[in-house]
Amino acid sequence: MKIAFVGKGGSGKTTLAALFARHLAAEGRPVLAVDADINQHLAVALGGPAHAARATTPLGEHLPAIKEYLRGDNPRIGSAAEMVKTTPPGRGSRLLRVVEDNPVYAACVGVVGGVRMAVTGEFSTADLGVACYHAKVGAVELLLNHLLDGPGEYVVVDMTAGADSFASGLFTRFDRTFLVCEPTVRSVGVYHQYAGYARDYGVALSVVGNKVEDATDVAFLREHVGADLLTWMSRSAYVRRAERGTVGPLDDLEQANRAVLGRLADTVDDTVQDWAAFTRWAHEFHRRNAEAWANDRAGLDLTAQIDPDFRMSPAPAPVTS
Image (tube, helix red, strand yellow):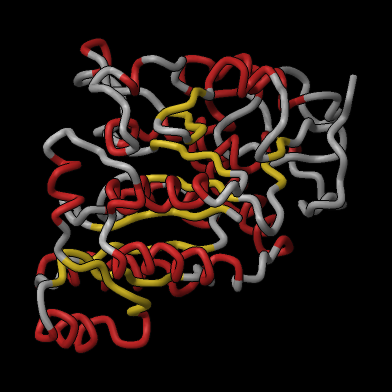
């Protein structure tokens, strides 16, 4: 199951993503965490040192090799150079599992705080003024396009803040999206913006209240987000210590807040994976990107990469050659 954590900057989405990934790992569930936020704070939130995000090769820096591996023997893709962030898999493509040995994971996945994780990479000095962060996030989109995850397997992605993820089709790559929302006007404003964009694409969206202090905060959230409010995290001394650099054992988290993580896991497990929709939107956004910019850049019609007779599901097996 692919899970996104989104929300206003400062809402606590990175903290919640890290707690959720640690909760899954503590229960022995297969999990891969991905930091796709420009701020790259997930590794520290998982309990790693300040330099933890730089200890593993960022996905974006390994992109040519990732493309070459995923291309496999797909006859619709002449070379890895022809692949873009939205290139969908087809017959002959290599498909990834959440837990397996492959060159992509060997190069780009490390262990932080007991959780396997990958990062998109920080914005470097060379990027300033000349690059868009979505170019780095494109590596995550390509990876998720080729990922075969089943029930009981989890990919937890800390997304960019606000509605930035709508700058690509990445928001359609998830089985469940958790929007972390503080009981403030600005935070619920981000919710309304996100929900408005997501409505037409069938995004399974749940709101997780955060930094809730009393019943009036809960009432405020219920008034503004309605039935989308799934649960909420109370103000937490454990989280406050973690934000100051001391990430304690997960068993030290307040019992009520630990129960929230269980509620999130149950909600994910109850979500039905719609592989037909996953494939349909992959094809649609690849077509849009090809026609908008990628065809001109590549000098050929990249919509020919779409394999109309291929649908993602746990059934296809990756090529082995």
